Amino acid sequence: MTLSTLRMRPLTAEAFAPFGTVIQKAGHRPLEINYGQTLKYAELACIEVDEQGGKPLAHIYCSQPVELPFRVEIMECHPRGSQTFMPLHDRPFLVVVAPPGSEPAPAAIRCFVTDGRQGVHLNKGVWHHYQLSLGEPADYLVIDRGGPGENTVERRLSEPLLIEEQYPQR
Image (cartoon, rainbow, N blue to C red; front, side, top):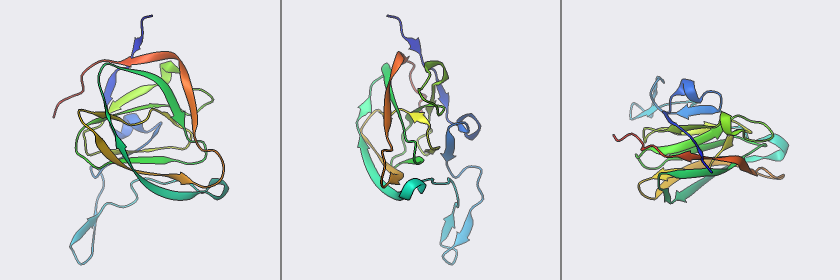
């Protein structure tokens, strides 16, 4: 079986807007706080977790790297809350997403490569692959919803996709 190729795109706020928010300092004016000792980049993402008694939770995920080429076979979504991934490293990683809906359509799946300092905030219901670290193990600060009700849905793709190109080097 020949797999369709999933092309990597640079992660930009405009390209990622249908799926969520890029978390980065670029494009935001900081506020000076703490008597001039701190620059605060405020309101970079709107966390949605309050549906049906949800509460915000913070986690650290320690992810093993993947090797390219990589087969994208499974996607997941969180119908009751948004989810944020902020790298605790400075290396590029991949973000694979598809719009909300009952199933992730292979033709609608996009692959973005971060610059290593960008995080992502996924809107509620956006389909995504788990973290795709490149090169070496990587840690991420993850903010998502805790509380009653199932908040993770997984689906196997009807047509797996292949990420085969090399990611941009810095």
